[in-house]
Image (cartoon, rainbow, N blue to C red; front, side, top):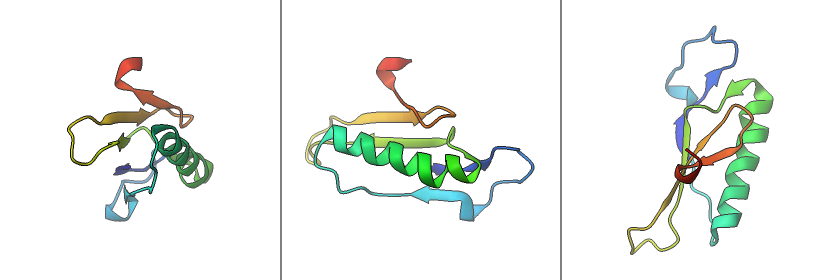
Length: 84
């Protein structure tokens, strides 16, 4: 998961300290999705930041090209390419 969190009020200009880059140790797509949603809810949304500029990916096999890409809506719901 990576991106920049921004203030919900929009009064503050984002800075380097607002950047996020996390790696979750998830061996299944479902577990990865749960970790990303939980992090977003408790560490971004509940602290009055917007998750709209966050992105997440899950790659089941690091040796293969297949990967799933996610975005977040304002309520930390995961949005996949299939949802768009």
